[in-house]
Length: 581
Image: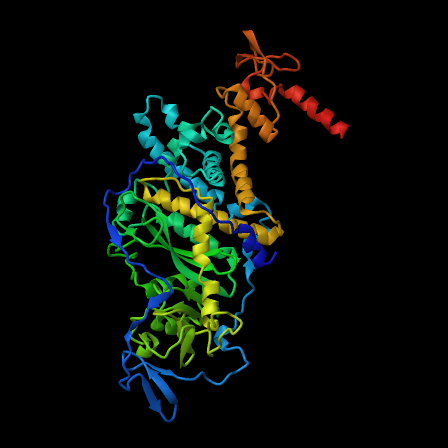
């Protein structure tokens, strides 16, 4: 299945839901700091005031031809493009085969594809850390069994129910409504897990050891989620090879609880939240690298420079030297960054620029009475092209590219857009599309615990990435909603089989579970009113029991009991089955 087909399967976007309930159970630090970010990444910008020709915007050099001068007085842009060369430039040669790689090539089912990102080893760690927390809070319960330890199958079922809530676009619906028994609830939730247990597990789930957290948190704001998150990112990189074009942008995960690195970005739908910067395949929307913005870290190994250039350089390390192109908006892109990516990482960059950059010539951003709408001005440096496009009155779009080296304009386009801008528009939406698809069938629930908000985001990304791998391996044409439904049922299945064996589960629920899972009802073991000696134990043990073999009515203890029948009858049954074959 090619990339375009995969993209069409997973692309499906609309609005979310309303009413929600909060998940608390927080044991993170109580510090709350909100950082205001004025993030305006719109491509179109207003033109500066009327331009007065003082003779400084065009510099004549007889050896190199006419040149524009940047506002810094030392950046020169040639007026005309370099001679055309039909050969592919060295830094645009990509030497890799895009697609699934490594162990992921063997993933041929929905669950196997998802397990690449959440193997049992990682889930077992979550079980261990969650049980440590459950042990701490158990004395607060009247019945200790209400806070009993969890298991691998139960955590998988919890995650499966989160995906199922997302499929029904019910992630922000009150939990009580999902378990409602008046006909308005969703039956699969009642069959899979009790409502109180579901709510308790969401409160209790942990991703690190709380006994050592204080020490780790003294040098790392992300201590409660660091190990889990980095392991997930590493797995994203291990199982898929990018295409030629990738996008860098940010996602804001909605969060209004207490957190020392919470951000307020007024032009984002969520406004308040946790920022994740992502490196995404522009074509298939596979998320390859992620970084959580952690604010100002304490002095130590995690104290990093959070400037846009530094963040980009950290994100592109796994693909450095690969010849790919990076597309980013004016929050990240700059001329020094474009030069650094090209010279030190063999990566090209296409991005919009803010008009206040000192390297831009004044004529590119100021009003000219004679400049018509839909006109373009180009400037050229070695391996770099700058274009100023005027889409309408008093508006400009500035784009820098180290991938393009000509002044091509699409004459078939009604608005005469430069090829650079058309390319930018076709590749800029990778991260935004991932963000929208996450929101469509999101598992996120309102929580006061920021690590849980990150966990929800990771689950959403894993749902997308695993579907891309599944579609690539099997060529199965399964839309995103059906894929997530299959995934949720696969994660819940084993826990349902365990649940049907619990004695105090109501019979009507057991009947429905057996209908859904095709589980065979095991015969009830017979008992006697009077105890008898086990027929298979040594007389010295003098072991008495009430249990009888369903076949021969012999007294049997637990040691000598096969499922529902004694060992002798079990052996005869196996021999009969063998001869019937």
